[in-house]
Image 1 (cartoon, rainbow, N blue to C red):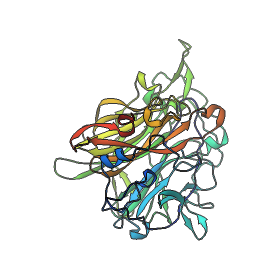
Image 2: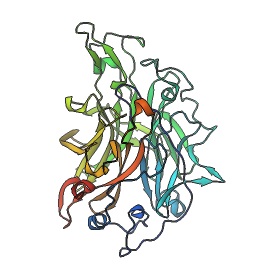
Image 3: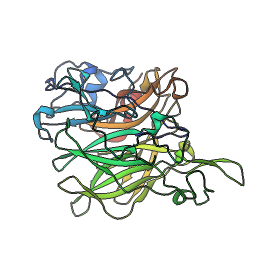
Image 4: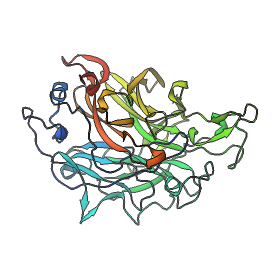
Length: 422
């Protein structure tokens, strides 16, 4: 999801039609728009992508799609062959439904229709009762209604025969919560399990906070739930929920220096287990995985983990979401040791991978295409637009990240469209 440095943002959605994916053969000439419409047993290579480079990305869907998340299901996934293929969901904010489903069919993204209606994970009339119904955020009581009714950053984790949706919503007290729901098939029905008890208080982040409208030590919102897994020395898979503390949503004036302040935005790591009924149990206290530094312009968020070349990588965004300041970083990650290192910029507004048409690339979601090769989905602003004057006009685009070079040798991850832009 994406919370915002100085103000938070509305979001936009839509849905997808059932169809089995087209069977592109490995030697078939590739249409860049159709690179991903592949059965699960086939894959693309870096040479395929470079030979068919789409130099100027086009929106996946011609409507606002903040915080895009793309998932590939196979015939062995929950739901079976009927739901195999690529699925897309995104933020919806104050719509009467939440998280409409889209599906990749015949080289394009289309609404997923069920009985003539665009299916959403939470259809109209079936929104969870604990969700905000207009109650103000105690930390930001002047937020507009569409931001108060926050339904953000859906991500779907596939594990133990279940689909688990992790998402952000405000509760009836106006507090941003990290919540989850489960289903045995992506087009439902989904069972909502409510929010997890992971929120922290302001003075855990800013001990000198002087107090404000919400009290001396209010609860801080949590956003951007993402599941990452790793295998320990005994060969056991261990799962972690990564969430962002939304400290940038709280601002105050330092009573001594008169400087404008806001809390930090650490990404927390919670180890957890999930029972057969879908219920999640947190194992021990949270640990701070990473927090924002001076070069992050006040926040980090939108974290996503990829495991490749025997190494985990943390990909995340920083800066103000609503204009060209937003950008995306990549770093090495050791979940068990709770360490992040070797951070570097992956894509920003000056990247040739945006074709000179877009800016503010952030909130990454990655899908593995083949050995060492991933499709990366981001939201961006078209040049000349920004949140302050245009409202939320973020569009979803797709680029590629490679962890192996053209000869198939492991290398430092790189953005394909940037390296081969010339």
